[in-house]
Image (cartoon, rainbow, N blue to C red; front, side, top):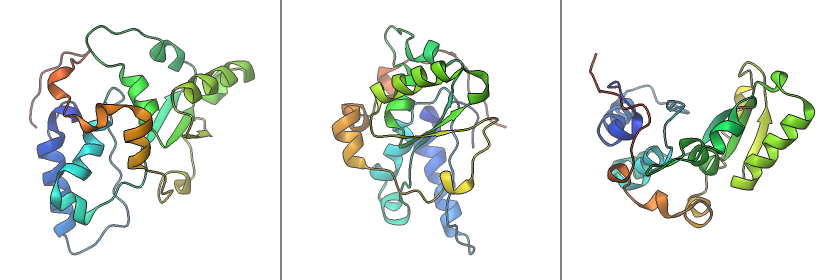
Length: 177
């Protein structure tokens, strides 16, 4: 995949790579797409509904978000001007939150983090972990994705092609390797 944020490359690279994977003789039970920590999940999810081949061949099992229990409060409460708060988007879109670094927070801090997450997404499961260690059955085959939830409960952002309406905090340049 080209370097750069997934929202910039998702339509071309992701579709091309997934189509190539689907043409292989050996079939996959699951394909796990890992985005950067700053990626908005909407463009990735949109790919599976906007591209006809993707609609026929693949389905979203769930949207997982790894949350740093120690620092998520700073990110969720960050006020951004003229762009989306990616942390809020990731929490809002998630079907399951992997609440990581639980060993670095007190029980009270963990309860506060859970409350902050549930205030933004009451429907997500929260799985606590340390060092991102989690059973694979907590990641694959959980069948939690709901387009209805995205459309009705998150916001109308999912239905829009928002790439022109947001800015990136990292102001990176794209390069190919």
